[in-house]
Length: 100
Image (cartoon, rainbow, N blue to C red; front, side, top):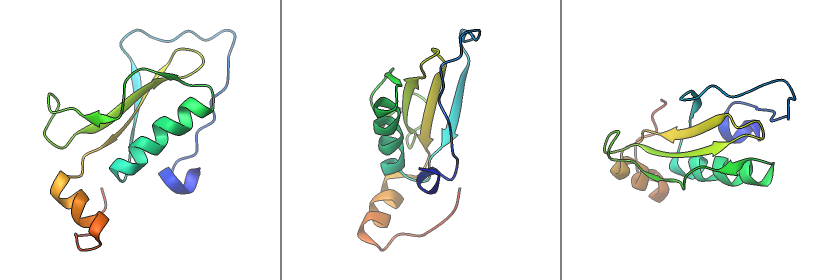
């Protein structure tokens, strides 16, 4: 999993931890596919759905993100800021390959 996202995360149940209201942890994803993979992986490993992977133009035009809740109720997010045109170019193999 670490190879997909560049970060390895372990989700565990902690008896004495309570989530802070309004706080969440956000991971920058290298692609929109990685946002979707994060969501799918979180649900398969005990996370709960808190949204669907989707564009969120209320944040900005190229913001694609998803929210999940870990087993303790902490809100986790994966987000990709790659513009749609650049993303589609990458899928076709002819877009710029820039890092974020």
